[in-house]
Length: 461
Image 1 (tube, rainbow, N blue to C red):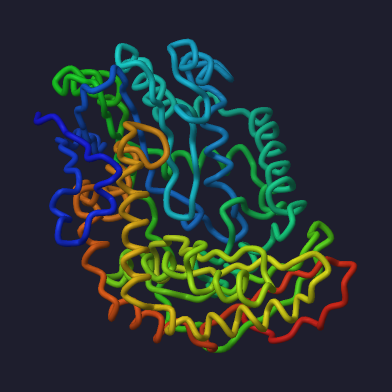
Image 2 (cartoon, rainbow, N blue to C red):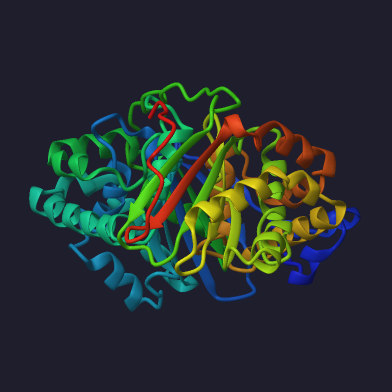
């Protein structure tokens, strides 16, 4: 296989006319008889190998009353399998030279769950064996005691990251307004305390058998590898794992382009020291032809060089920080979020009025200069991530993302060109269509010692 050569980060700043010079990541792919998709990428520049497995399951796969299962099961995957003791997954990999967190981790989103290891390349078989053992046998050793233990861990994670954090409820509330109650994205990845409490060992075993199957996953083996040897190891450890019945079809995720009416909620926040305002819009999904225009638009509205920052922080002085981003969801529609933090003792109403006004004037800031800046930032971030083999945003990760989201591992090689094709007219079209009052959700967070207006517009939650 041809060895890949990565461009320097400076390449991210090249004009669109030179997009052909973006790095090309070589790979080969195969599908095992049990349905496991496997992608191999060779890079001998460092004696490191990465194993990254993505399962096509996330919180969107959960049923009402069973929220939080995908994330809870991510935790269960580190509690041992038939041949690996509880807690030994990390211990064995760290003993082989990997680092917890950066090199070994698992994450859950609305659209997928992934697990990855990066370690010295002479230890590749260890990582493959560990992943195969838990794919094939985890349900055999899943006990009520392990479930109770990890359920408590996840509940504590919810308390720390959501319930007891300043503005910690914003994402759940925003999801509840942007997506109808029967939509797969209506609830958060972490799930509710009630649903977590109700989960039984049988529920979790059923979830595993439904979604943790070779025919519902993609495995990427990347780095300092010999492809023929890697293929032999993959077949040795994964080849005998039986395929499962296909998972049930996802609930209907189709959505109207617009929410339909403005939505607003004032939140009294005992954890907040300063007011904050979150403004959200329903925008085209990551599978939509307008996806890159959405991403460029959110980048144009974010950062210290953006018109929003100039207006709200530097000129008016009503905010200390302003940021914008899109979440990157696949099914039916995505969310574009704009957030502003106020000053201590400042009026939340004034912050809200200023932010809504400036977002309404966003078209004035959509200039060619800002477009070029945003596209350069996106190119840099993507190509900089590709300098690593494994881990978050590394080559193995993006190859797995391409297959899971688009059934196209070559996504890694077309991403920069797709960004470069976005025109100012594309971005203005999305802004004109979607950044409108009847597609807007406003969440106003007020430190609870300050007065606030009552909660306003009711909406279907």
